[in-house]
Amino acid sequence: MLFSKFNLEGKVALITGASGLLGQEHAYALLESGATVILTDISMERLELARERLCNSFESHLIIVKTMDVTRKNDINAVSDDLIDQGLRLDILINNAAIDPKVSKDKGLEEASRLENFSLDQWNLQLSVGLTGAFLCSQVFGSKMSSDDKGGVILNIASDLSVFSPDQRLYAKEGIPQDSQPVKPVTYSVIKTALIGLTRYLATYWSNQGVRCNALSPGGVFNGQDDVFVDRLKNLIPLNRMANADEYRSTIQFLCSDASSYMNGQNIIVDGGRSVW
Picture 1 (cartoon, helix red, strand yellow):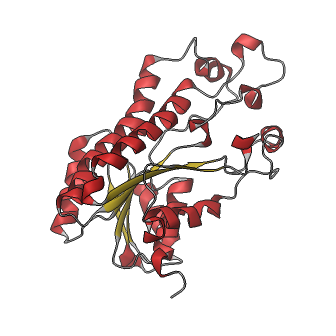
Picture 2 (cartoon, helix red, strand yellow; picture 1 turned 180 degrees about the vertical axis):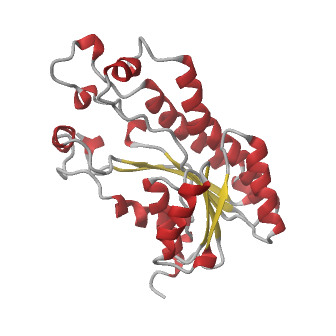
């Protein structure tokens, strides 16, 4: 079969932050390749909506939902134990959960995004989800993958901001003083860059047990953003557009399957060419 190495039938994958825009796309990609997919997030309501959408295209028994807070190791252990009780061995972990702070039109929130005003509470919260959560899930689920020598795949979802700094000009608003202009908060770049370091560490840690780890760094996805922002961003991208939400599916399939069996510890940047300018 031409694309047999992309076949994930019989494999079990778990996605954190699975009810979000890209989380659902990652799930679609894996289901399309035949995997059983476990959607995890903190809201069962949002998980059920995601499951309902996916069930329009795939058999319902292949889609499992479980609430899980990635900042709580007890939650992660409970899900791990549930999978064992159900006779499911995890083969793929996608660390996707994150808080992506959006620039708000509210002046107070805009000012709070700036480094001078950024709160320690927000720093701790966002790192706990986007970075500590990836560490804890890798610790729990990666340990299980390595324990029987059957191996597995860990995929960390980073960002193009893992390789360059945010261009704060994208977020500038007319009529607002410079010291009150909205910015992409410091946490996002710190977390996404740190995920690359975690990827390299994990790639070597369980390599003898067949556990591979890579990262995907996607560029911006169009999701109804402000026209001014989109036009500014397009000018920074050689392909002159933002990504469509479904354009990362094939990369997910490649990185989570035997098609990438000799790829380990890499950061795959899919950004329309922005990082080469």
